Length: 272
Image (cartoon, rainbow, N blue to C red; front, side, top):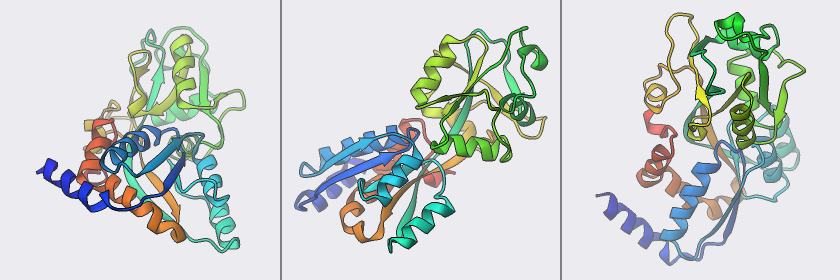
């Protein structure tokens, strides 16, 4: 049945003269965008899709500046961004394409296995500074975070820190890969990454928001809603360019596109 759908989809767009499309923004959404774009281009040889990261804020800025056709974002659009679009007479459309679990990660040698939301808040705000305060070794905690233009930075601040500010001495990283590299090389480190980026180089922690039930960041736990740090991922586009981006968006939201998303370690929108 799936092969039949792909065949029909390919035939539907094979004769369409699809222009080049640019996708830019969230590093969290990047794997989804790359893999669905590659499959889309295989099905549609006339299509040309380029995908680059840089952060949610960078993507939305590029959309407003008309230097990208689709902005990837791991947070909702800000009021200031909406106002900028309105002032320019532009109307932006928001499309949820998947959900993502945000994993809290530490060095593999760290004996700590779980933390409460409040403990995470106190660590990232600088109130807890040594791992022995949360059952670990006598070792200084080194906090790694994303830069302020990152949607992941915004979501972690909103969900885990309850909109309180990060500690001033946290180390801002320009991309998810930099977080993974830094945490894997620093024994006292802690950071956060999208579930799809988790690797054996780092260790994930179980998290509890009610101080009783701890859940590990897995696809299964995100889908059954036992893991608490889950957020929607978006594509934004300018409504005047709907004709350009619709074929690609239809594929991303199709059963075939959502299957790619699930195999990539993300949560399909129909399973949240």
